[in-house]
Image (cartoon, rainbow, N blue to C red; front, side, top):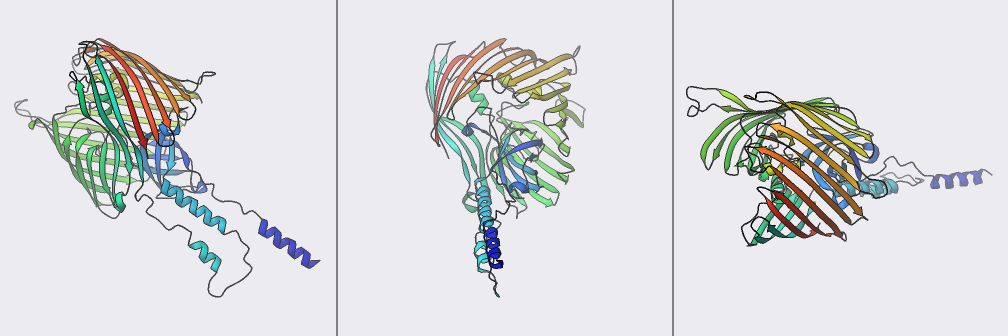
Amino acid sequence: MRAILLLLASVALLRAEIPETVRQRKTFKVKQAIPGAVYLDGGTAHGLAEGMTVIVERRAPGEAGMAARRICEAVIVSVATQSSLAEIRSSEEGAVPQAGDAAVLSAQDEAALSLAQSARRRQRYAQVVSFTSGDPLEEEVREYVPMAPPSEVGRMRGSVGFEYNLIQDRASGVSSSQQGASARVDWTRIDGTYWRASGYWRGRWNRRGGPRQQTLTDLINRTYTMGLFYENPRSKNQLGFGRILLPWASSLSTIDGGYYARRLAKHVTAGVFAGSTPDPAQWNYDPNRQMLGVFTSFDQGSYEKVRWTGTVGAAAARVHWRPERNFLFVENTLYAGEKFSVMHNMEADLKNARYLPGQHGAMLSRSFLTARIQPSRRFSVDLNQNYFRGLPTFDSSLLGTGLLDKFLFQGFSGGFRALPLEQLTISANWGRSSREGDAKSSLNQMYSAGWKRLPYVGLRIDGRYTRFSSSFGSGSYESISLIRELGDSLRLELMGGQQMFGGALTQQSRSRFLNGQVDWNLGPHYFLSAGWLSYRGAAQNYDQMFFTLGYRF
């Protein structure tokens, strides 16, 4: 009887399921976004560990996974059981992570995690024999346990597309065509080195027909960045080249140039940068400007509690290589946990005796202060103060895109963003705009609302309304967009809007646009996009058709 019981106990032991301590996941959600970092809804209980890399992506409800827009790349620096903190290492121009974005584990880290899981499963055996010089089964399993690998070596993700555009100028009746290409790449640890390339590029190599019409699509694509970066954790030096932002002072203009930085101490970094300013969405845009500067950056604290980063620097700007301005810049960020953050940046020009006889010292030319309070995932409040001296020089054609919203308020403003329902998102912003010389202040307003999926028709709908009166002009714009996905491979989008604008920066009083686009995934790698844009205005009056055939890798 005893032998039978021992036999049954042995069988039960062999067949017992050992509870899995790690629930492996590939995709996580961003619970909270703070300046320079994001909190994820996964931790050690899901296999995450310090040093792993995630790609933060965003896609509209109903969009195919391959249509996701890359927001940033982040490295996990702190892990708890059910949550983790990832520090942002690189991000797309104008892209800011938000709660609800998806964070996808890198392919190398996912493979390493799967290998570790496989190793754990191999350990489910009953040890019935003892050895004097080690256990062969444990030694065999140990061969499959991943070491601390350079998981980013040679990882490359991106796409390349070939484009054809046909533009009909309605004012002159002249048509033209353009051929070109676009590329998006995220290539880390190139050929085993510590160089990486990331960003987006779009260019033209052929044009036929009449004079080239500057289109809204061309303007938007000039706001992207593409760069080559050197980031070696064992080195004190960092470099970057291309169309880039200065990582330690993101409030400065995008530059076509580069930077060199060196870590002087654990919390101190200094460097130099130089380049031109090509971004038409910058408040002081001038494509003929050259800029050279130096900076010193400091950081202190921890992401879990309170963290501060600060940068101070000086730069000299030239236009067509003629002296324009010498200025100082300061940028500070402070955040406490995931509930509160505050950021301030400013520029102060040194007074030029040639233009201001007898005057010396510095005068404030640009200042932006913003504070965010987010008591819950469904609700956040923003408070802002904005100032700039003189008229901004951004391209006013971009007003309807939302890229210039931060310049429409001069003075104090505040707003909120809320998710009263899982399907509904609403936001609003109000501010009293005033500047030196104004007889009275004006009330500016912004509203937006979106419904993720309308019943029966399955459409996503988003609407925006803005009325503003700023130092550079006044006006309003309204837009509405409809998005529908048919299966996993076909996406349809229709957007229309109107912009009223009057001021010193443009001849247009009213413009209207209607844009339709189709995105079709042809299998796992190939894609086809086609669209049509009709734009009617006093300064721009054209129709545009475009086609893109591309490959994802």
